[in-house]
Image 1: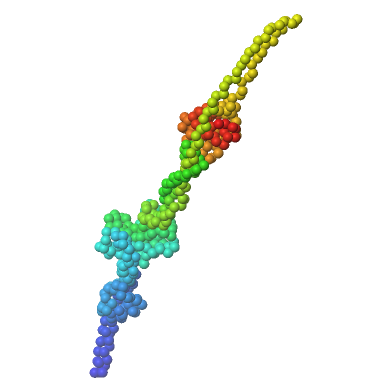
Image 2 (image 1 turned 180 degrees about the vertical axis):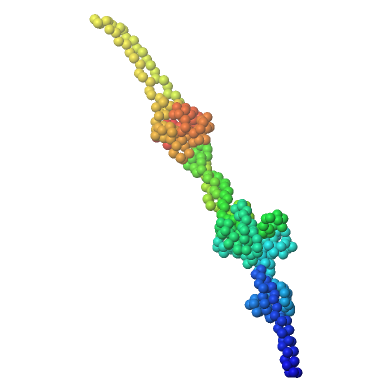
Length: 399
């Protein structure tokens, strides 16, 4: 009887111990909640039994070393390193938040402008945490705001659902609006379109004027432009980054002269013009004589009388016969009043522009009539002599 009583007592004690070791708890691992029956005596034992591994960055409540009691709730939140931008400064932080909504609420004390920055790989974007564990989110892209009904499917899933395609340089971040109406999402997934393009800016470079001396050109003919000046170009190239069409930054890539200026060349004559030869003394007029003879009448009644000799032809000095000017024009320009050879001399008599204007001409000689050119050529000859056309006047024997 004693032995039987002892056995009953042992069985009763064992039943109490068994009931005490078995328990039911709620296990929440990153939002996935399960009801677990266990004999584990501590939180560590429960996690090991359920195959849940944690490290120093993870959060376990109650603490992993705490005793496990029936009806307890055990919560595990994995720690994740999340890229963030706080008031324009890039950083990364370890967070045990369940989703972006909770993470941004936690970070809001660190700055006025807080955002989670998605990692980019080609056309894909990702964050190590969900945007919204159990609700919709806004999608802001290309000037439009749309609502994605399920914020838990990840960034790529949300963008695919909304038909938003990312270019390689586009930026993706997540923000929270504390003032959003109660019936609208708090969290927004924002896509920024980024372009990087080269921009060229040019600036003109003034040319220089170079004066050259020419000892074969008469000094009194004035300077002549033998080469027109051309401005050069200085080009600066910038790399310009725009975000949603607004310039964010620019970087100077190069700055150099891309077109060199061309000097203007002016030629001034240094040759002294020889003094004009003195006008020759006028030749004496030829003497004339008349003789009379006795008139005699013949049977026909005719009579005869003497006649004087003709005066010699004038030489080409001073004023010249009209034919001389035609010969001079033929020699100088081939008789073409519109001649412009590009050497600074124009028209029938190869005036320089400066001499033409000094004689009262307008425009260029080659733009005026042959009569006007001849008129001013005669004026120049009367003023300065035939030496204005040294080669052709010598050829024609003009002095």
